[in-house]
Image 1 (cartoon, rainbow, N blue to C red):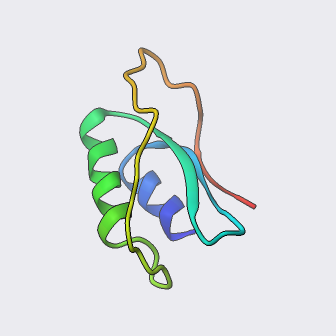
Image 2: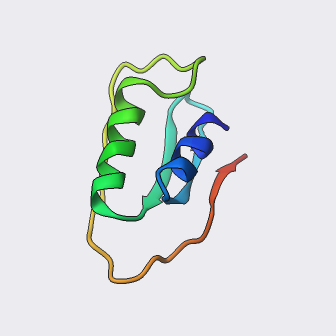
Length: 75
C-alpha cells in the first residue's frame, strides 16, 4: 500500500504486485519527471518492510495518452 500511496502522491497511474519470488513487478504511467521520481523512490526507499538490493526498469516508452487509471496494488 505504501507504493500505491506514493504513486498517487506523485499523480501517477499504474499498478504493482509482489511476486512469489520476493520481487515486485508493475507498470507506472504519468509525466516523465514524476515517473523518474517514482523510480528513485522504488530504488532507494520503497515500503518500510522492503529490502531493496537492486531495481531494474524495463520496457520504458513514451505514450501520448494514459492507458491506465488509478494506482492499485494487485494480489
